[in-house]
Length: 276
Image (cartoon, rainbow, N blue to C red; front, side):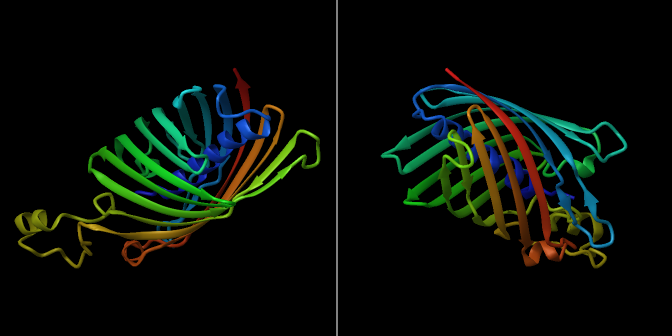
């Protein structure tokens, strides 16, 4: 099983919103650098097979530094709570973000990943991830294009197209309170080399005489994979931010033919920022 979008949706998007909210709600511009620490929990209820649903609850600890020139670095530690063996992963990321005219945002990053434990919890098997994203903000709407190239046992490219609407409330409940809610729709595309239970067509001809014994072999190409609804919300008071996110994803026909069902999950996170 290679479940990857739960990690992207539940961890990356709420964290990005949180980082943005810390600088804005604290009454400062993006010029100061800041250190952000957070602890998160996700239910990650992934049902890849109706008769064998797997729950992947996990804790995530994060520490990130964002400089005043756009460079940033972060470390993430994931501890999976359900497997019988010790299962965890660690990520180190470095990147650069630049905003133009307060509307265009470009972000490039590299991530090095180490996973150990029950392979059912690994998601896509990769060691390196190159990401390039761009977004355009028009009033309260934000359109985002995310590109990701993952290098590991197989090399895969993914493209996510997202549209969100931001609801922002200053002085919410408290004088220093800031509330943000950003419903987001995402369409995701990608290569299919990561899909489990499949074999390469050439390999099948040479090793089985062309007889795949009825096993479905998808095309090895770039294709639509799923559509999702994400509901992230965050509330900031001073240097503390409490955030949460819920998602629901509907897989494509290709994934459904691999016995995938609709996916859902939620995340809660508490963060603390130190502004320099």
